[in-house]
Length: 154
Image (cartoon, rainbow, N blue to C red):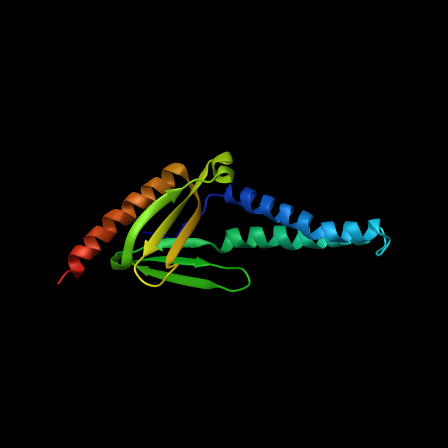
């Protein structure tokens, strides 16, 4: 299988999250202006900086996110500041879910969550898939995991 990227609409979700975070981080600056602790331009400058960094991070995150299913494992590449490469051997997959939160449903997207054998929290999430794409990926990973488990049996 070739390397797969996320659906472009995931950028909308990540940019909206960046806008919300920028607003929350800017609020204390606005409060400080209200109490005459900072000049009036400070919240505007802080908001612009937070917004630029957040939106830039969201767009770079999209560009750097990819996954690939091979005959032996699921490979994920992601990360903006820290590049993360994850390999999930198919034989270690316990179960696979597809998920659609309210924001994802609003933009017509879903996520696929792969749970693996191992330590606590040993799961990976592939965001930014269409609903059909997440369902198809879930079924394909389930099929491949069952086949890999059969080949690995003693």
